[in-house]
Image (cartoon, rainbow, N blue to C red; front, side, top):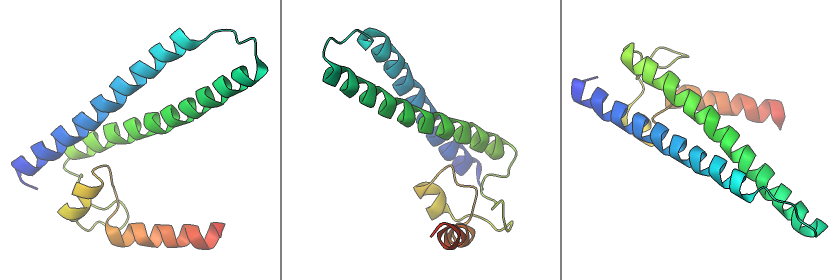
Length: 120
């Protein structure tokens, strides 16, 4: 991987991480401002549903942020474009589509195929 490619992916990953952090900050602020008592049980139920949905989304984003940090470490350690499973290089086209990937397309397809047979 060239220096330019490494810098490109680093910038892309940092941008993704910053966007996640900004969004989570907005969510925390919104939740503080919107936590209020609702006299109507239906309004309260709707609020709780929306809050729980938001929290699930933020949890997924937290996991993605963790994966981005791990990927940045792999980039620094010169392991970024190497498949964790087979050791082959991950193609640039795949890295462009999914910058946090750690599997080449072949290994990812095998993983998904195993999941489908295990979980129906």
